[in-house]
Amino acid sequence: MKTAIILISEAGNSVATILQKEFGYDLFSLHYEPNATHIESIDSLLKAEWEQREAFIFIGALGICVRSIAPFIADKHQDPAVVCTDATGKNVISVVSGHAGGANRLTREVASALGAHPVVTTLSDNSNLWAVDRLAKENGWTEHTDDKMNDIVFAFVNREPTALLLDIRDRGTEELEESLPDHVTVVSSWDEIDATRFKLALIVSPKVYRKLAGVLTLQFVPRIFDIGIGLARQAQPAAEIIRNIIDMLERQHGLHFAPRQICTIDVKADEPVIRQWQSEGIPVRFYTARELAATEAPTPSETVEKHVGTPGVCEPAAILASENGVLLLPKQKGKDFTVAVAVDRKYLRQGHIEIVGAGPGDPELVSVRGRRMLEKADLILYAGSLVPRELTECAKEGAVVRSSASMAIEEQCRLMKEFYDRGKFIVRLHTGDPCIFGAIQEQMAFFDEYHMSYHITPGISSFLAAAAELRSQFTIPERVQTIILTRGEGRTPMPEREKLHLLARSRSTMCIFLSASIVDDVQQQLLQEYPEDTPVAACYHLTWRDQRIYRGKLKDLASIVKGNKLTLTTMLVVGDAIDNRRGNSALYDRHFTHLFRKGIED
Image (tube, rainbow, N blue to C red; front, side):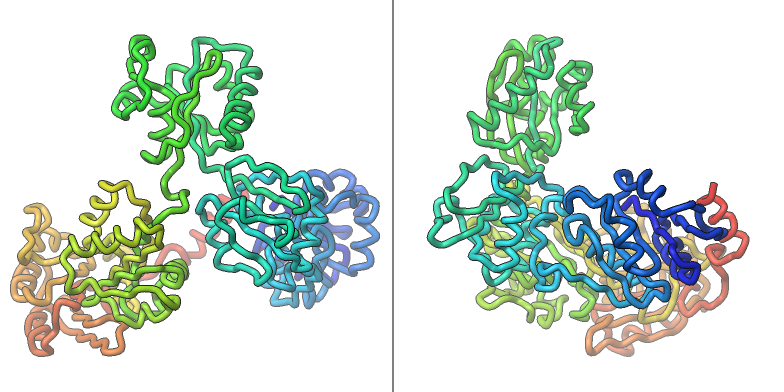
């Protein structure tokens, strides 16, 4: 937020200093303070800044704050947020533009920085209801309604029966589904919304919907479409062509013009239509003829290929921009233009696979997002030999929870596709972080082959858990600045350049996965470069209930592993960083700090 702090009382200077340091906001004061811009009056500041600022934080009496802003207040959807805290920093009050302007959120942020009590009186906030008049801004949607926003907000906070229609899936719609109030019913189609059942309809869709008599309606339009454009040379007038394109999309094909980006061939970069869109802040992406020609054009044109060297422009451009997504609107011809619309598959309300990193084992170390994914999944397929089943105990009622330990990769993929084809949400739960020895490549190749929607939620890798449990910083100033994650050579060959003895030459902190069964070879290769008294640690089942950690010297590594009968679920760590307490980071050097601050001030 472009925010100003107004210090009314000298007694509040310590509060002002904390907020200025924490948030970097501009500070104005009626008094001469070394860290503030002096003002003669609050009125003069507000006259100059009221329409320029997103928020004001008053420090002092609430009465002075209210009387100061009264002449400037116009509309809660246009006014800046206003927050007031007393000079002692005990209470922070949301004054103007509560949820519409963000004052309620700012109030909580300021209160958190001060350890103060936030005072918010907005009904929707105190009832844990959505701030429907802020959903568009918070999620990057545009909003459309023929009704008064106040009537919509009033109906919602008074818990009138509300229909929620979601035609797409994004982070915003996921959050709506996860926090569904009891007076909101999710419907699957517009035909289910009936004035006898609902007083309010909330819609998240790029489609154009008609107004329904007797039902207050608020539609949110997400920017998820990629629009491919083909243009005649120097097509003009630009404004008229743009109006024709918008009219074609909205009137003929029922799609709101709210593109994620406009896409075309690079030779059209200087076209008036393209420059007009760029001047309006609409992202435009260009592709070469070679890139476009490498993507299938469902409606090819010999004329286009003759002039620009590719069978099509609008369709392949839209498909490329959407990450080889779905072509929702094939090539449409207008006067001096062609247009096509595609969408990334991840936005479609269809089956979806979330590959989730389970973390090292402790159920509390899965990420917040990973936990959310597990709670909403219809199928959880977890790596049973490596992931504790306790991680799946948060599954919703009716979810299918299966271990993949006894399944071949083909069986795993068939099971996930079966649920996917039924439009279900699948979590593939892998140990640690799935991108580190996670064996997900074959699965992703399968998903790609069948054009399945999937995403990866990262997890805490066991090497990070090793550092935490060893209470060691794996990088030591001036001694060790590199961490190597690798494994010994077992049944799967290692590339020649990645043999352990070659990696060991740097004497970095080395974390060796999946190698307890070949520990003799690991030790022999490491001893070629590391001194025999180099610290080592064998970490079994990190963060599991039966975790065991054995420290020693490199010369004893094999005997430590064998003597304690450690298995494949053991992380081997080698390097001087283990238990090291020597060496200071330049981050805390007072000269470094001085230069850092000077850089900010400059």
